[in-house]
Length: 151
Image 1 (tube, rainbow, N blue to C red):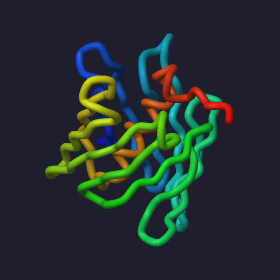
Image 2: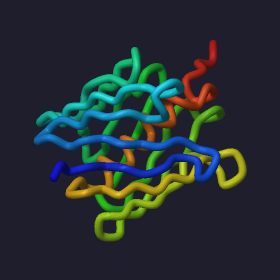
Image 3: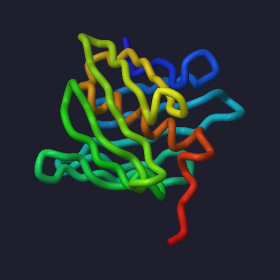
Image 4: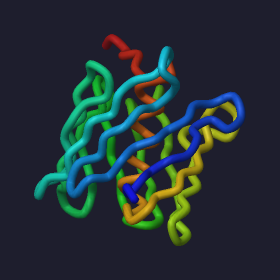
C-alpha cells in the first residue's frame, strides 16, 4: 500500500488534496482533473524543493525555521507536529497554524473568516510536511494567494 497524504482544503466548497509519498518525494494533485495543479516536491538535506503547477517551491531549513518561497510568496514555518508560520507579505499574507494528532493534521490558513481550514490524513509524514502540502495547494488553487503586490 502506498503512503498517502490526502484530505481537503477549504471544507465542503474547497479542494481535494491527494499525494503519494515515495521516499523523499511527494507527488500528487491539488484540486480536480480540470481545475487542479500537480504537486511535485522533494525533501532534501537542506529543506524542500520542487514545483506546483508551473511555479517553483524552494524552502530551506535555517535556524530551526523553514524559510523560502512558494511561487511568488515568501514562506516561514516553525515546528514539527504543531506548526505555525506565515505566507506572503505582512499586510497581504496568511497566518498558518496546524496541529498533528497521530496521522491526522488539522489547520487553518489565514483568518477564520477569509482563510481556509484544512484537514489531512498524513500517513507516515510529519505534520510540517502536511502543512507544506496544504500551503502549496492553497497557493496553486486560490487566485488571491498567488497575487503579488507591487511596491
